[in-house]
Amino acid sequence: MKPVRKAVFPVAGLGTRFLPATKAMAKEMLTVVDKPLIQYAVEEAKEAGIEQMIFVTGRGKGALEDHFDISFELEATMRARGKSLQPLESTRFTPGAIVSVRQQEPLGLGHAVWCAREIVGDEPFAVLLPDDLMYGKPGCLRQMVDAYQKVGGNIICVEEVAREKTSSYGIITPGRSEGRLTEVTGLVEKPKPEEAPSTLGVIGRYILQPEIMRVLDNPRKGAGGEIQLTDAMAEVIGQQPFHGVTVDAVRYDCGDKAGFITANLALALDRDDVAPAVRAFIADLR
Ligand code: UTP
Image (cartoon, rainbow, N blue to C red; front, top):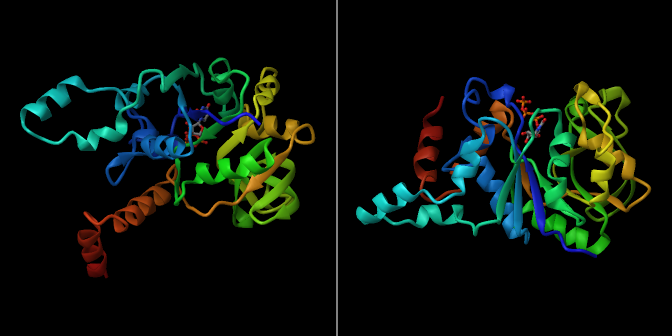
């Protein structure tokens, strides 16, 4: 079984639900406490043993690359003023560990993943959607890699969703279950509640085999007129092992305003440096 060494971060979406904040700034640069969403996802991937991060970006997303570059002026000024560079340490990567490719048109998540095919090559890879902030120890992708080492094939992260929300998710048809693993026998993108085969929704973490890129070579438009990753995954079911895994982590949907604010509150309350002031403010709320 080949190890999972590469991860694709599709970050070329338009982020329309967050306008006007995302007019000139990437959604993935939105900050939870003191780190942008992209950094939470990159740190999660690093913890899971990922060696190369592949950003699939679009126009106006240059800040994502700059964030993981050395800011020479900033560092020189901080050094001259005797300030610690420690807050910048987690943004440092060796050259080549973070690479990016452009998705020239936002044609859908499946298309975004396909844009990374030459860099991914012939090996399994992870996909992380940074707007799903997964908060857990060990991290979500680490837990998924552990599951992958047992069963191989394709692994997607699944979570129970409310039946009235199925039309916001990819939904699996579940097969046999064992512990946290459930065999996936079918997948459908954004089904109506009355048509959903279950209430197990796919969330933004995947471990996929490279053959999915061959399916995406000949894409078809799916839900919303977009090239959907879910449709491509559905085609490899039956040809390769395919499992859903529920992880021990909390998901904050930061693509959504309420989810983003909840994430800020929850993570702030988990931080010794900011929790006391935030807790005091909450206690005062009527
Ligand atoms: P979303 O469905 O959240 O779309 O994409 P979006 O454009 O980012 O946001 P809204 O709905 O307009 O507010 C899920 C993930 O897929 C990426 C997004 O960047 C996000 O990480 N994506 C989506 C692409 O990279 N390219 C696409 O063509 C579509």
